[in-house]
Length: 452
Image (cartoon, rainbow, N blue to C red; front, side, top):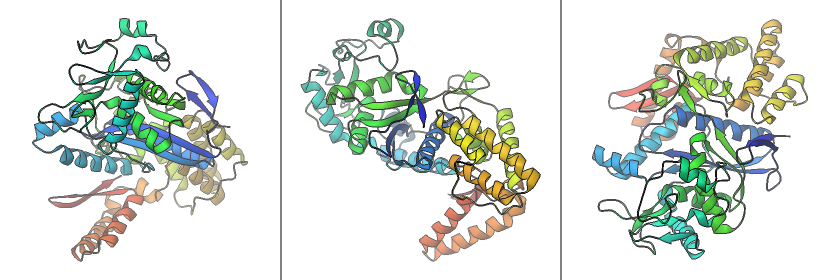
């Protein structure tokens, strides 16, 4: 049986879904004002792996990953760029989808945008005000009153006294308590706003996820995930909002992936060691990056360096070399087979991809020794659960020059299809190349390609 490390209880627990054979999962997604960075890539890949394994385990999965498309950073960046908020967010949502596809991440079942759920947020805030858990302030904002929610601090494991003493809390005369957090921000000149019972304004960040998860998964659902940095205050505040509004448990299992570090230092813009996904993909094959992320347990720190990526490339090359020249296919897995059983045991132990990948290397060694098609197919089938080893080995093992003519010919066919307005055929060619690990990028100078 699947066991998940539950952050709120700080222990592994057997996964028992609310509805048998179904799993509802909500993951905090990106605030779209810039390109995705490595931390975003880890969230995308980790929870793609989680949903793939839940499906392989027989669960019907309803996966929600939101997009924050209104925030202070978005407003500032749009002003700096001299473009509208809509133009900015659409551009970076499209870029996020391109990065997602390159990394082999399947789209979530639902990708709600905050701006499309403002009425639901207003409704939840009104309910919290009515229950005395929130209050309108003189400055026009509406705040959540944390001391009114007895369970506040359960996820972080800190009391209100600890939080007041240890956290950097911005002093605001409008708040009754420095720890109170904003649910609704009064409108400022030149900023987008919506009408509300408290005057025109826009929602705070924390209320977005409570309202969107309620609408798409219900008041109470199975799994809530995100990066470790969101555990406090964002997820703590979500619990206070949702459980305060509905008087019932919000989430059964909380999952948090570890930080990304660069040369043993936490990745941050201030240290100048901050990398976007695109910067990394300019140097390394996207499947190598995915493999690098999956080789580490999702809760452990992930230390990025060029050498670690080169090591991941060498390891992935060993797996593809085993499959080269063998007509392997993805087939239904017999989970009673010895290797498959140990793979499943690893994945059922809190998604232990490190041990699961070790099983893949055992199979690769056996394929190298026996050249067995059945063993190679099992290797490819188990790897498919992790979203790796699905390309033609030739495309991974050989250099770009050996396939350049083939790709350029496909690009030419796509261009002709677009000129004749046969967009379905153009999309088919693009998707066919993407499935082979080749990403097309259209620009003012024409279409270029790179390994996805």
